[in-house]
Image (cartoon, rainbow, N blue to C red; front, side):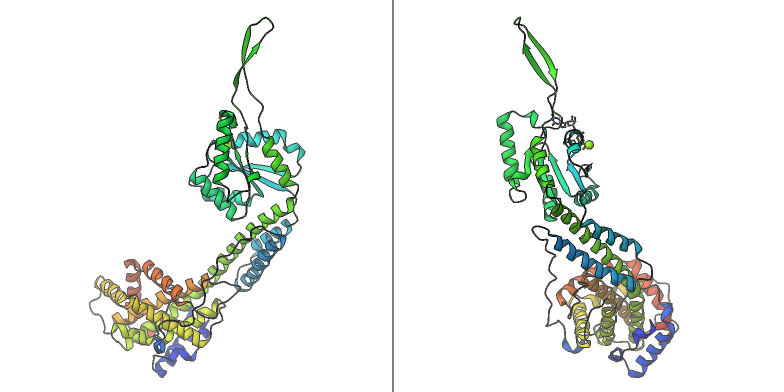
Length: 476
Ligand SMILES: Nc1nc2c(ncn2[C@@H]2O[C@H](COP(=O)(O)OP(=O)(O)OP(=O)(O)O)[C@@H](O)[C@H]2O)c(=O)[nH]1
Ligand SMILES: [Mg+2]
């Protein structure tokens, strides 16, 4: 890793001999900078405050209207590319992910169907599952029915995920569709989940009321579901009083429980299951997308582990530079030739194809944004406040500047890491989007203003500065 810092542009704002000396020190000491993340800031390179060449916003991934086998295969292929990259970069084996991938791929030809019954509390999910098992399942081999516990509670996210891993969802309601039910339905449909909406407990209404509610439910979901995916059922009708006239003109009344009514639903289910493959491809598609995200998260974690020590190095180089050559706060940024190299190093780590000019422009953008957002003054204030609370009697000239430089470098580095993490791994950017970087910078700064963090940085810096040699500052 020591080799990562041997780059000529590092020399920018620092005297040549000092920079070379720093590089030498770093080469000898890289292993010792473990505890600080990130980065480095600073260059206001030749007036490049904003990138002229802005890359377009990354497009949100569009889910096709109907999922074909090729859609699922495409996502699986992308996931595989990512997985191969993770295997190359990770020191620990990724067998678990490899296995998951193989399983997902095999699933493309699956003919078993998992049907999930979802809905709010007490709508009749258990009753429906029971009656489907009794009266319908025996004619349908290779179908498994699961009840998903009620949504809309604290565990909603998990349950929703269960619903998405099913091939087919029967969404049960027992009255008008509520707003929260509609939102869940919408989410499922956005993921192209096959959903049948069944209105249960129809026995509690008389015919005209029943028709009116069903019409309202249908019109409420017209843009989400086809009309023939909505029906009524009565999974466990209430017992009713039945009066029978006897031949002797007497009337005998008895309570009887009507048979469940599920024929409208089973007709739709039979129709759907006649063509199982597209339903299964939809499931594999959703799972593959989720899998791909999991791989990306792992890859980002591996890269972050490698990025943090790099940022730490640059952080103390910036500190040593500003400490040895104290300048007014705003001029701190002039020491920032370092950050172009930081952009390049981190960009390489994230496999972004940035040229030297693009890295310089990005560094300039970072510096410009820091001035614009007032971060330079803020960091100086934070550091001065932290210093007041530090039990040191003598603060050497250049201490505030050095610590501010370290702090700003850290903020810049963390922002770059976050920026690169969000990049599309398959399509590395060839330029940096200044606007997006700016909003990331702001939020990273906001997240790193805590006094405990600043104080800890200050303590570390003071230990380094008190030795009064730049080498001690860099190497600790
Ligand atoms: N009238 C009538 N009552 C029903 C019907 N289906 C279910 N119920 C009643 O509704 C209540 C809840 O039924 P369950 O099947 O336990 O509902 P659930 O959705 O599984 O409930 P949770 O798992 O607790 O969320 C029970 O008292 C059922 O008898 C129906 O078609 N008509
Ligand atoms: Mg239940």
